[in-house]
Image (cartoon, rainbow, N blue to C red; front, side, top):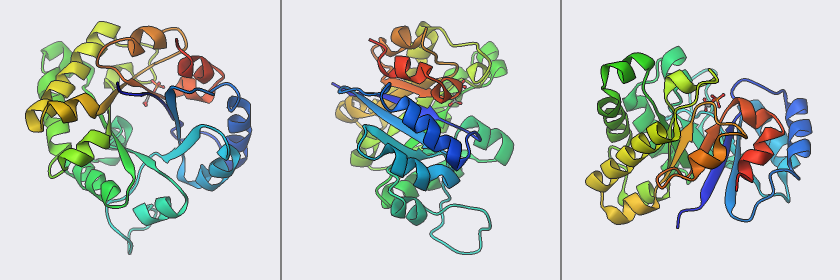
Length: 248
Ligand code: PGA
């Protein structure tokens, strides 16, 4: 009985002023009693977004966070800063962070552990490239990403976290994985979690699919046994997000 999640990933879009306008527009559209709605927004938008979302079911998350407490790390955002701003969720290890900013599985693991230390729920991302899929090594790669990401994460922590499976070839390309392809990998991740912990943890952890989720394909994707919702980029910036939240 896992609650579904519709999480938006705004990426590098929306100024603070635009963020407020978008949240005001989406607020009535994303109302839901049975789906958790999370908007992961650029760090500078967080305070304005928090205020705009007050009194609604929208939870504000961050798109990244550093694994150190404080100090000489110019340009980074600390977990304490996020907590002070009221943030409860943070995306960790998005493929764009891995590809453009060199984040490794080890960095991802340190960030996941640090988020838990501060009571923030990580949304840990994983996903294969097109070449990997063509070579048939998707699950090897995903297992490695998830296994290293979960190093030293306790069973209790793992039960409460969120993993997002996002095939790189489906991100921002308009090409969605078929619901069967997405389900296959999400099930593979759940099986791995059972292997690493136990069935109780595997039954609780929430696994999202991400990659060109839109109003037209959300119902089929979210209807799969092992897909507990979506991490949504482009479509989270539009009224479509309301249809994704209310996919049923
Ligand atoms: P997309 O992005 O929905 O625009 O493909 C998803 C993501 O990168 O989280």
